[in-house]
Length: 417
Image 1 (tube, rainbow, N blue to C red):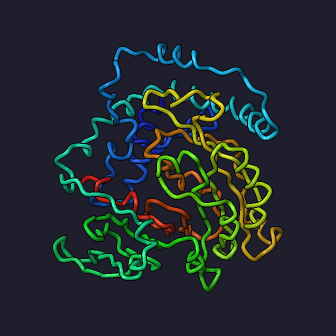
Image 2: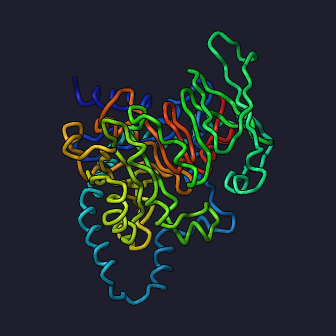
Image 3: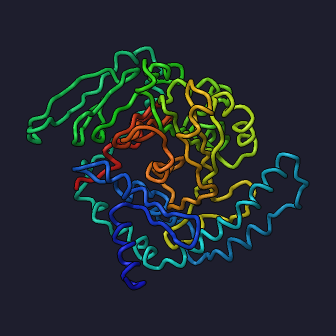
């Protein structure tokens, strides 16, 4: 097979799967919209609602002739004298220098993949972004599940789940009225389900479930038998973050609360791969290494990097900008559950270190779906039993736990197929 035919085949596979593997670097490109769309039969994730920053129009008060060179020149006028780094900042800088070479190599691989860049340049033209496919053209305020879950009426709030059982028509659905908080709500069918809560509508992927509660109720998800535990556990904590607090994006959680997460009790008998999202703050990296993983009884396995890029293959920001680097960290480890590491070691495969996941970022704090990239390292049963902690969206086959797992399941983020 010639090089051109191979490239066409890779692009065809990418259009189907949303994943593009690079042969010349330890990197992969992920299109979250295409990956997420595999969870739905009758709807599609809207590119314009996912890639909010990519689809943003230029502010009307900004001169379009203002070039990036002009903006850089303006920033240079405000540059302060370089300050002496403290011990923690020195460690962070050393980590960055070690990662820099393979991050740059990953970006170069993307920039050389002209066929992939051609696909990315047409994101705007995806038919699912057209207005006539919308569920509703009427603006509806998004519910704040965090606030509703804290009021005294919380136990009284109910959600209506409309599921289509086998053999039923679209108009003939079964309605289930369930408590929305502190309750496991499942769509066991092989079709999308729609849910109604107050004035909003939500899409629930097939064969998935969610449990919406605060961190004090997470122990309700611990299975009575470890054979029913999870062998892939993804954790995206709301780390304490001044930017998130100032912009009221989401409530953050002090680090000490994370120490009590029942990772060991959630782990399957044959062990689990744990994937933890961490920002570039050295304080958090040190906390994970010295306190969090030991408290969870998780042994370190590898570090992945999420490199955020634009549709033209460039980075979303300066790679070397100390406080705003265009990448985040995914730390991987293995949980043995109640067994010892020696008992489970044969179940655990070595994880390839320093992999780079590239994608165009979505909304603030939204992470790309990574299950397909981790599955080869997941020990135990197949299909894998998967759970995401602090989830803000749902995936087919997964349990999603957090205080707002329906956040990105709102109908406004979808278009009809």
